[in-house]
Structure formats: structure tokens, C-alpha cells
Image (cartoon, one colour):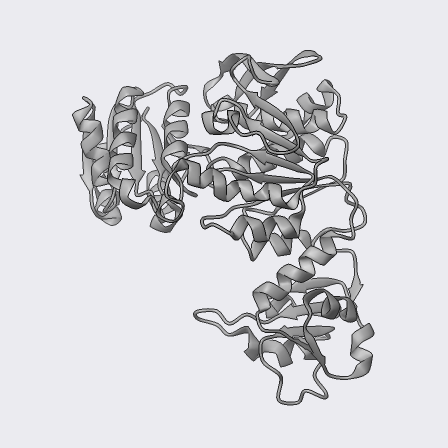
Length: 452
């Protein structure tokens, strides 16, 4: 992080400083809310969580040499405790992060959409890193707490930043974009995610479209033109579309899948075309690559640099990770799930040889459309060549029912552990098993059981 002073943090968040006057000129070298990492130069932000109250650890952090604390309470020994007192630690850290981002005159790419944000963010970062010192969101720190931590890692060496921006309610993107102030906004797809709060797909677009409010007229919108809602989206700035349809500005054809070993394809753009390959699994990677190509070209990169960036891409965590386990191939994709990502995972499964088994769990926050959307996923799996569809979870009963009605063999388990107990009777050597559900269902335990 590019250092600043305590007085800068006070001014940025509008807090009230208490403590020794000399504390205002202490240097802040990093910001944390984890007291275990506090040391000299730290700005410790105290949050009151459901289980742990960070205010209890302020004295300990200061004893380790922390420069100052951000607190929603005035400390008992205020005259001796360097502390910025605020109404909300969350709003304060957002304001400090927004101020810090303003210290950098570099391209900032904001990545949003209903599915594929992390994959697209990582692909863009892989491409840009060929030429630029690239800062990016770690893991999926993409919400009102994660984005500030991302921005506060910016340092003087960074030449470009890629920030993932995730929301599930109206107004959240507005707050995020005023922190990030992206110069390029990348949209993956507008899908059936968070419908409980956003209503329908047009509502999803309106909520995510708040990102344009934090951009100036010189910005760039990079939109998935294969998505009808995004194709019809014309923000008040330059736009570039990408997709598989030749009507897009950047598009792909001649897509060749090599199962778990990756894919090859041809990228077309206004100045020509080039060959590309990605050594990771998943049909969805074509879209991430096209978005990255559009961003790279907007920043002046050559086709050969972009193609090299594709080769550098690596799958993150439990997103379409292929595991070889004693003759069984497991596709671990249990970080998150919505109808769009479920269908994309089913599409990718078709590229692997073997009997195809899909263990599909609940998709959350879908509102009144939940049952129909779960049933639709089951039908899609049946029509997509999945040999056995297993619904697991309260909502996933509709997945199994939809698959069975569409002609596939289907099983249903209300309980994850009951399914795990029956796995030896269900799967067999040579099977390809997709495991996917919303993260809170902890389907990684199913993956662990399959590996054993």
C-alpha cells in the first residue's frame, strides 16, 4: 500500500480524532481489521461482528505498534489512545478507500455481472500482467467490505487495477462505484441472480448499471453482446461488445475443446484476428477471454500479448476445478450457483468423456421464481446429455423433478450427509461428476467424499 498519515484518514472519513496530537502524523502503511496482523504502521479498523467485537482488541493492536484505530466508540482513555471515532466503521473504511483510490491516475477496470465475475477478473488480470504491473481483487473480495480492502492495497508500483464488484441490492453498486471510480466497466452477463431483492433481469441490470454513475464520459463500457439486455444497453460513453456472435466488436469462432485440458479458438476484432488457447477447463472461459481481449486492446496491447495472457490464466479455488481421483473425474464448482452458472457448468461437462453425473444443490436468493428456475436447471441437464442428475437440498427437489420429467435418470436427497453415505453405490470408475450449489451448502464436503 502507498503509505499515508493518520491525519489523511481523519480527513477522508470525516471522523473525530482523539489521542495524542503527535498521533496525527504517524504513518499508516497498511489497514487491517484482523488484530492478529496488527503491527507497526497498521491502521486497525474495529468492527462489531455477530460473534466477535473488534473494539475489544484495540488496546492490543496499539500495544503492538499500530498507528491508530478506527472505532465506533470513544475509548475510555481517549487522551492517550490514538483513535478515529466514527458513526460507522464500514462507511469510514469505504471513505478512506475512496480517498486512497483517488491518489492513483491509472486505468481501473470494474468487473460486474450475474455470473463469471471472478473468472473474468482473473482473466483480465492475467492478460494485463503481460505488459503492466497489475493490481487486482484477491479471491472474491467484491462487496462493500471487500472492495475497500482491495483499493487500500494499491501502491505506487501499480499501473492498472482490476476490481471485482458484486451486489445483491439496489444502491450497493452506487456506493461501490463511487469508491472504485472505474475507467472501464466490464459486464459478464445479466442473469437470474439475487431476484429476491432485484425482482427480475431488468432489475438486475438497473442495479448493476449504477456503476456508470461513478464513471465520466471518457469511460468505456465492455459488454457481453450475446446477452440481449446488454446488447440493448447504451450508456453515455464509448462501448465495446464481445461474444460469439459475429455482430460483436470482439468475437470468437472455431472453438475447439480438449476436455479437461483446455480449449482453442480464434479471436476476431476490428483490426484482424488471432489464435488463442487456454490451458484450463470450461466452456465459459471463452467469454472471459473475449472480455479480457477487449480490455487489453483498449489499453493498447498487441494480440500476441493478449494471447500470452490467456496462457497465464489459472482457475481460482472451487470454480470449475477438475480433480482426478482414482479413475473418477470430479468437477468441483461449489463456490456459488445461479441458473446461468448451472447451465454453463452443464455445457462444459459435455466436453469430458465418461458417464456424466451432476450433483446439483440449492440456488439461493431467487425469490418467487425459485422453484421454476430450479426445475429449469434439471430440464437443461437432462437435455444437455447428463446421464444422472442428483438434486440435493431443500430447493433442489425441483431440479431432480425437472430432470426426470425431461427424460433423465434422477435421484433426490434432502440431506447432504445422506447423499455422501450413498455415493459408493451411485458413482463408478470412469464417471465424470459435476458438484455445484450455492456456497452455504458446503458441497465441498461432497467433493472430499468423492476424492476418498
